[in-house]
Length: 181
Image (cartoon, rainbow, N blue to C red; front, side, top):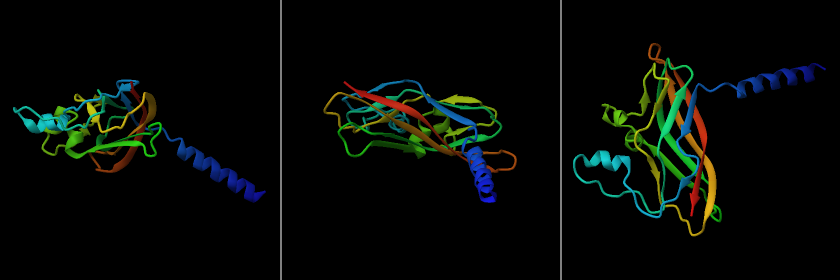
């Protein structure tokens, strides 16, 4: 009986830890993103070009996420986004499409992030909702047939308390769907 009670208490503790409420949420602006059979120009290429004409740097057959919105219930900390990973299994392919964006390419998704001295994707304390102002592009997708495929966009980062500098890891995700016509 004592073993059963210990197992029950341990499972209740683990269940309460696994259902912890996330402070940060992420959402994208479109439910089904079309696959475009052309090249495109990334936000980073536009930023790096300055006044010159940027050149296409996104491979053909791309999709774009027009806006990524970050929301927080408690905005007392700084949210720092380290990188985004999109993973979508494509019908008939043995490996999923994976698109990872970090560093300057991530900072270029919002003009104020790129303009900061650190070029860091950071949302200030006190800001409950913030969104990108340049689309995220993922290209080079082999699409010989029509399909609809769903996957996830994961956000990796941390929240930093501006007073104590204590950091809490953040890993959230949202569904994403692409469609080839």
